[in-house]
Image 1 (cartoon, rainbow, N blue to C red):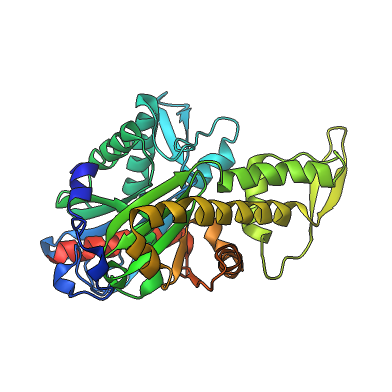
Image 2 (cartoon, rainbow, N blue to C red):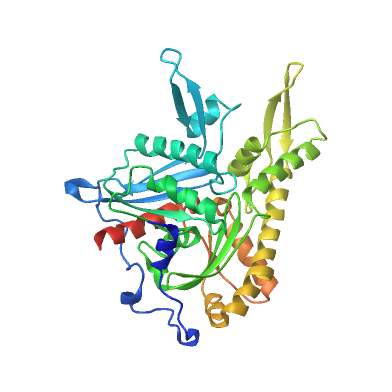
Length: 384
């Protein structure tokens, strides 16, 4: 099923926005409200509901664990190839194993967020096939995959071909916006988000996305590649060089690790690390400002784009939705939303920018939320 087909399943835009009910009858929902805890393991011929997010940094899969819960798998979106010394056949490693064992030639296929060309699609398909085989994702499954809000028809078509050619999803394959999928776990244990009018901000590695949602319908989608988690990593690397007066140079992979381990808007603490010097010996250094200066600049820019670019566009297109949505919590998802304290800081800075009180929330695991939300949609569609 194509991306266009998936989007066509969403409810049509209503003519009279003034009468939009933020709590409509669930019979009107594109996906009915339900619990995600049903035991649907694909046994007895029943298709297994599977959620997928192929992210630029990490790929996440979610499926029933066979005991009434959910099993999630997360891995770096990368692969490396090598020749078997006996057979001479090309072998594939993916994820953390590939990055650790072959750092000089590991390939991150989705650095721009989507497979841009035929070569990128081929590498992504090899990677995804390896992941689903390693995690026993059954062919007898219904698959919902989260797609980024990017105006790139070729890239979206390539992503679609990767998922559809992977050997899973015999029952159905469907796509939904990543920010909608990511918001679902923030509203409850089921699909309550489908009944809401709200704003979602996806803080990803390659893009900052913002959208309004009205009962599952995406309105005024906005995306920018100028405010990203990857840019934070590059700034951290530059800041470290400056803070250590040029004595330490780190790559963006190390910078990302610093961010994920140490960034904290509430209780950041300086930390030390050690590098091996070219002439021998080790150099220990302390980082006090580099990580949080980069994160602080990112958040300022994210708030600027949200408050002064996205919101005016939304107000111009859908004034009533704009008014209703700002009375509801703004949902933050994506990898950058994992930083402790960022939700409260976003809330405070947006409130100041708009000169009104707003509330922000995030799911418990923002980096997994899109996949979990996608799996819940797949579970309801499988039941239907």
